[in-house]
Image (cartoon, rainbow, N blue to C red):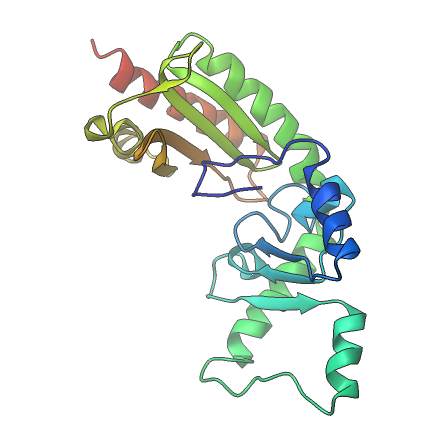
Length: 235
């Protein structure tokens, strides 16, 4: 699931399985960058779980500690761990911030709460409702060319023409304009630009907290629709 570089773009069906098969055929390690989309953001702990594909090495961060403290981790398969051990090597954890005790404690606490409160199941179920509710709320705007994603990781693509997907001029900076207006209205969303048409292309990323209530998700939809309207349909 491409994050900010594409504005939340799911891979086409079968893509991940094909990449896994190619890597297996040529004995190449499959490395998954799940820094933005992993740790439950897509409704499963690993984003690749949707494709039933397992990577050899997975990079995960951001949601790992719930934003309370910066934390990233590299997760690798037993086969890779065995190869490192057999060669007499060890995992290098001697860098300045590696194994940071406070960060690891925060990450462990967050993961325990996610498990205790069933938040992955919550994200998977409520994410479908959030997506359909956003689609309904934004349907009146022809400039909304696509709404995609999984769980609590959704991207809203803004275009000049919904049929041709022609992007807005880069200087229009429409995603940033909507993001600023949303912030004024009490909502934080993530503007992405420059991912289509040689520097053009605008997308808004929506990624609510895993424990957001139904009322808060409704508030998110209302404020985003209001903000989009204020920019695209100013009175």
